[in-house]
Image (cartoon, rainbow, N blue to C red):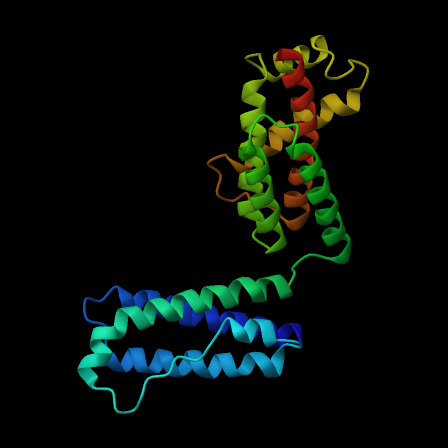
Length: 240
């Protein structure tokens, strides 16, 4: 079924993109609009035959009906509104289908679930809601297979936190964490974790476009970010 769902997802993406492209015209081509309506409606009918228990998704994707008696001028007048509707409904279908197709293994999915729990526990202790918002978005992107987006969001959280730790260089920041008793100087593993997290985050924010994170990279960076946030909470409490 996964192959069929992937094909369905691709169709909705293509229809959405064509609707966006058509909207750019001051007067969208009537035949193009008709064709998109037809393609959208036929794709919607495929949902029920491919996806088990598709009733909820189908409910979000009603067919677009235009009476045969409608004038060509009316189609032209309503074209952008129709194209907007097609785009919005396709986007909804895309979101739902991406949830069904997970690019992650069972082990990685379990790790994501664990990270969600950790983030939720940390959220009440963090200084503001933006930490949680960024982490939830990073996790969501990873779930959808958008590993670069996930890594970039995780990376900016790491860099933000590191900038909040007093010290010009990383060695100075580590020294601050030790002096504030956030980490024990004997815990070389924790010190190494902070150093590696900083390096990985900066790598993904570098100007080298050849660096592309794998699922493992994205998940690792998410985990590093959560661990760093735990240290940041301790530091924040000592400085409050």
